[in-house]
Image 1 (cartoon, rainbow, N blue to C red):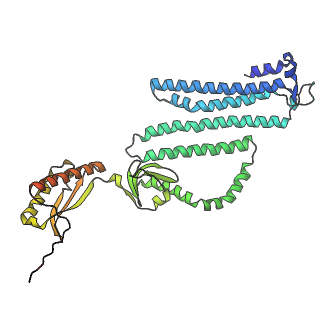
Image 2 (image 1 turned 60 degrees about the horizontal axis):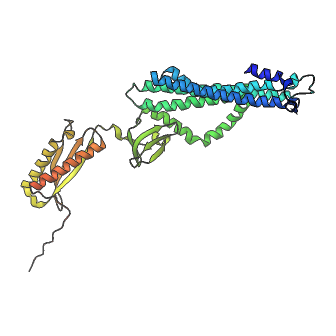
Length: 384
């Protein structure tokens, strides 16, 4: 490419007269055309290289699976195209005449200040390409972190990986901006940071909620009140946790709504972790009519005990057997207290068990002619 640009500069004598027309301070039209051509060629080459590298990485991954090489190729494909663009900016200088390289036939070339600025821009784009490469390489680190945390039983590590990824990318972006500004563009970063420090107090006061949320996220990662995918209840909201970030935690309610809760609120609130319950308990009062009498009331208790004894999900834990008692005389019914624990603690398994128990209870009571009670009132009128 350098040879191509140099050859074009030296071959100006064989061009048509219209292309030798001086357009900008000793620079003919053909020089500007060569500049545009170099830009277009380097952009095209960059895109072609990006396409080839991506294609090779995809084919390699299809044959041998993801590896360090395929991950590196995928991450560096786009930064390589940016690097080719930076190379094009460097080569463009060879197409133009500046003050210091003006020929004897040219009074003056383009200002050397523009040349210096052009060089700074080219260096800045090169640095951006390098920073972009590091930014994309974070995906490689994330990939291996996911493999590492996938070997652990806890899912808290799964929440930490996205946070580490975001932190690394933000750090790379900030450091790149500072280095490019100071070392390439010549900005006085020290005075800028000093000014920022003076205003930092005001910013900290204005962003106190953000800071509180950040420390709330640290509390979540250290105390581990819940993990990804577990169903929790915070205030009026209940649902599984989808994501934990620096500022907030996202949970999906049972109605399908996405709720974003600030981490500072979670750190200062009572968190009910429904996902870690070992079982689901049902407590119910079965009411039968007073007409049942002693015999049928005793039989009703026995029937419920027999029904629960035949349900495998109810008799998993020997320390928590089902409880059935005739415990109360209500105003309009005889009350039978029923309590049992369902395991595994799956909500829909729990509902299925309840349905089976209820239907069997209705069937058995109907066969024994035991009537369920409902609120009634009987009036007795005395005749004189």
